[in-house]
Length: 481
Image (cartoon, rainbow, N blue to C red):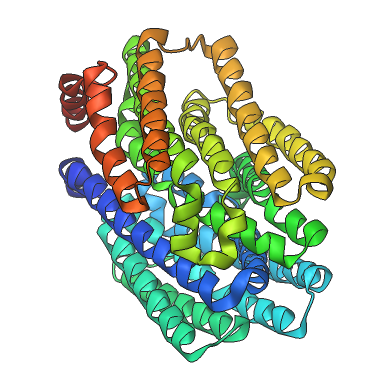
């Protein structure tokens, strides 16, 4: 990679991050609308089957990548003259992993299917697995900080998928047409990604050394990521297997709302991670201050969402998914509580990687997986999908606590000052109380959401939970970094 390219990355970083955040926000809004259409198209039972198929697809897709893309970025940056070889190793490794992944996926589908249409739809979705190898070439744009190209392709995928879902909804289609549409959309956009990447790189046949290093270094990262994905999504499969497809549909609908909200921690960490990485070795105190600020911003976003979800869960669920999904509403506040810990998990997880403690993530993920599966096996038969919601909250809290203790003991990371955190909690509590009162007075969903959007920032500023000068200063630091 040339010096000119390095210089371009430095100048383009700020605009690149802003573009990613904007595109993700638009895709989040579109994703919520698509989820609502899917729920109305399939009903609770069909949506439960669809949600379960998507979890299987997510696990299989991760197994084929296994976290090695991040390793390739690191190695290609360290050895820019061998970039084409590292990309070739990435493609070869992903292609090899796709074969056992498809076999495992077929076995899981046979075990989970409860109808011929569900089985056939699952097979169609699995058909895109070999084509997903081409998505690895987005690394070429990432290395050049030209993420607008993958973001444009992501947006095209979202638009094509949304249009397909709308047509199928209007025609009264079911699982199989949706599976065909998703697979076709994925193949088209993956092909575009590969063609765009091949304009700037030419992957070469990798050496044995490159393949072995990629596999060896990527193994702990991949295992920890796979365990994280497994304990985060295994609950959907367990609800489906234990409580049935209707319960899985109700749970999947609420989980999708929270899943879309991952935009918040992703955006925060995308902005702050470069500063943390640059400061960790040379200015640990500065890195600590930035970590505190990140924790506070994540608290602001997640606690505000929790306060709102407690009050608007039922009308929001009915608005998005229809009256048939009203019984799912109690799960939303619990999952919103889990989202608070998910936000902190993004921060602590990145700090573990920055500090070189990633091997510990495998053990933490394994314990979390056992805890989640065991807890769900006990609670789902008793509480239905609400048992899965509560276990999600317990598991995410346990993971954050474990990583926080690890960071405190290994690198001396101290918790942020409690005074600011207390003000944020107070602002969220006042918001929840005000919304509950307005709800009792008969204010509708639109009014409640408007009050939340206006009152929460005012409460944060009024209680001095947020300092605008600090936000501007931090953004200036990021540009300087």
